Image 1 (tube, rainbow, N blue to C red):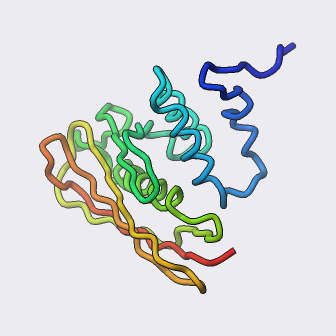
Image 2: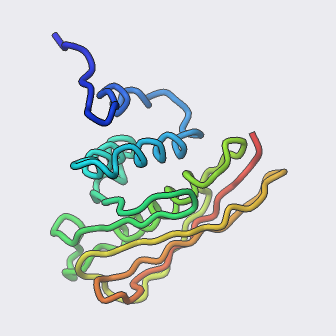
Length: 181
């Protein structure tokens, strides 16, 4: 029998970080929740690890590449992907879909945590341009502008993926359908 939720030093209970807590709920408000958890955990020892683990549980497919959030604030996300066998292809470089997943999580987090509470959004189209083979740790950055939304609009959010030398290896564009609540 469980003794109840564990209280972390940061003041978060384990139930707050539980995967089941989000099951069956709308993800329209996931951005503000994620930003609040990031803000609370990121400065603590092991806090970033715990946040990244939580992100992988909340978004299981994204969790398969084990992205590491390096920076997160409204309208900005910087995410790392460590080069390892699990994300490689037969050409011994990082798989194209792993890079698409990395770009999508960067653009999605930047957009989600930047949206005002009265706006909801969902990605409706993703395209990616691969510029060169990717090897080593990759860094994806996205810094979308958040437009004023008074009616349903489509808005393009971009992410750039760079290798360890700073070369851009891929560019992702995600079209978001934004609408007032």
